[in-house]
Each structure stands twice: as C-alpha cells, then as structure tokens.
Length: 237
Image (cartoon, rainbow, N blue to C red; front, side, top):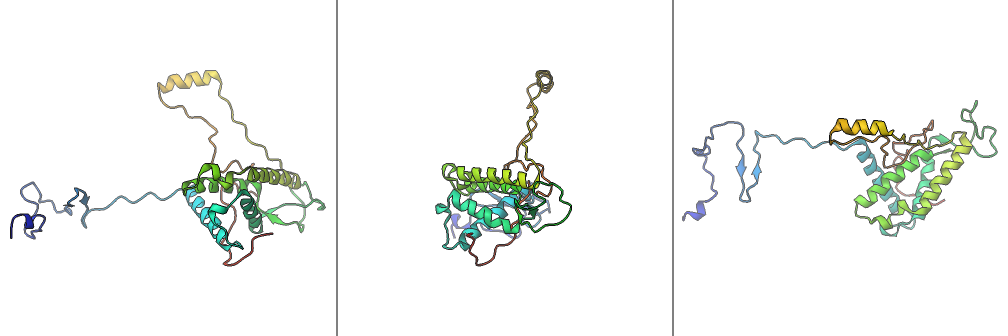
C-alpha cells in the first residue's frame, strides 16, 4: 500500500499526535473540506425559536394556501388576485367573535349594548388589517413579486376601509389612527448630543399588520380567529 492510500485512515491508538491532544472532552474531526464536525462530547447551540409574529405569519400563510386548495375550482397562487383575497376575508367572518350590529338592530351604534341580540359575529377590522399585513409580507418572502402582490391590491385596501367604517358605525366605536408625537427640537438636540454619534430611537414604530384601532373585543395584533379549514368546502358566498 502506498503512502497516498493511507491518508485519512484512522488510528485507534492515536490520540491526536503530539500537538497537545490529551483532552478528553470529545475531540473534533477535520473533514477533507476543512470543516470541523463536533463529536459526541460537543454540543451545538440551540436555534432561537421563531417570534410570535413569525409563527403567526407562517400559520396564516399555510391557512391561505389550504384555502386555495379547497377553493372550487382550485386556485393557484399565481392566479390569485385581490378579488380572491377579499373573498378569503369574507370567508373568515364565520370564525369571527366580534358582534357587528345590523342597521335594523336597536343596538346599532351602541358600544355597550345592554342585552344580547341576534346580529352576526364577524372578524374585527383590526384583525383583518393585521392579517393582510402578515400575508403581504409572507407572499414576498415566499418568492412573490411586490408589484404582483394580491394582498397589496387597491381593491383590498378599499375593502378594509369599508369594513373599518361600517364596523365603526355599527358598534359605535370610532377607529382613529394614533398620531405620532413629533419630538421637539430641544429634545432632539439633547438626544443627539447625549448619544454622541449613536442611534436615536424614534417612537411610534409600526407593525406589519397596521393598527388595530384600540377596539374592545378586537383581536388586533394577533391572528384572526381562523381555525382549521374544512377538508372540502365551497368558500364562495
């Protein structure tokens, strides 16, 4: 056997040569590509768990893909348009938990009705707004182009605005966007001198799903109460 055929052969009696091996804490082995692989004694650092937002975004994305598969006729993501997104949002109303009074209800416009009524439960506007924000981000993270993103379509924005206005009237709870407080020039000057070249934090950072309107009974910021989709359904209304 020549010398080249013995390169890389293991020697059970070799403890790492005279290079100061001797340590019994699981020696590493070098591969031909130069990468080091840990042995039994080593321990890899555990991967950080995904944030609550990332987990919710993944669940929402999987739910929407399942909705497309159950759609009759089935839809592909490439053929999905803003109209299909609106159809999906209307479909989710059956899982809603927010009482939205109809025009003929005696409690129409009352934020705290004194008695129950037969008005339907729907998804709150804040939940739908946050959901669209997550799905819009997930679409582009999964290879979609921003210019063809159906969740950012003008029709979807108009629909969400109409839902916000109608629910505000029906529930007697106005949705007002919180205005960002503009820092005074003195505070900015003081902050910049104190930071000495550091980064100044700006308040009012927004989330990807828009604001929830501060609405009681609204699950904004979290996921819309979707639940598992049925295996076969016709989601069109």
